[in-house]
Image (tube, rainbow, N blue to C red; front, top):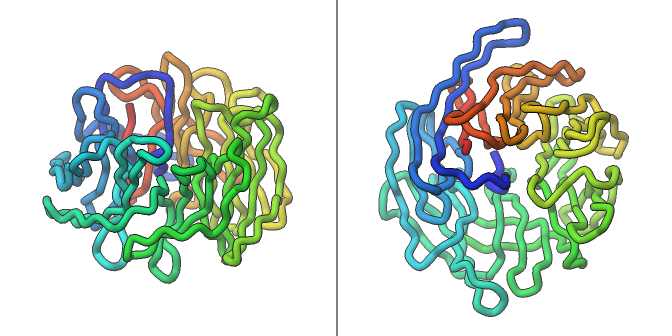
Length: 345
């Protein structure tokens, strides 16, 4: 899942989890922690490089691999870097891509594309373009789709990273007050979709955008005001039914978040409104092999939870997260073995 999930609780330690959940109607769920990072090193999510082996990143410290037995190996401690673009994203050329930066701003900022393999010391650094990016999806031609922030002007864009490390902007939002506030996906129609959010607007205005490969942007649905906030971001996917599914951390009937179903033509409806308590404020989800949506909530200061949501809006709590299990929304993914894995505070 996304490396951009944030929360207002500073972690003392972090864990990687595995969750085995049955199909709807079954009650057995197993939750276990398989690895713990000490201190404040913050894993940014997981990408499976081969069955049972995952890439992750430890805050601004290093990239590492982790297997299902909880055996971790540091593979790249980037020199002179104190910001990462998230866990390396695997591609067809057997390398995985991310970015590193020096943490500077304006003319002092430096951000480079890097790639690694599971072997220590394998990192390759490509020429920098000072575009701080996050990667979300492999495109049909093998390149990687993501969003980027231009460190020279603060503008947010839909961008593509080639396997040679070149970052190309497809569409750049012309307003520095706006930013892309979800992941970006390529849908079955060949266009790119995500959410644009006015972070400085009193009403927190946001809309779902469609960007064509030629860089033409269309607003397909305007979201209600105040459904996003500075501490939470959302997630968007295309379901196996062709519709887009989008979570908002606020809004809905209860004010604690909503799951939207949106056609590519822009017809939208809420299929579930999140509730107060540990089930409040969704924070990342996916569609699993059984066709249902699985995700995590940010919850509240007392706990969060992992859940299953059918496309018709039936919600099931799978595991409540307290104390050592984590207190904020986690990044989760489904491994090739069918089990869900994720990182959490």
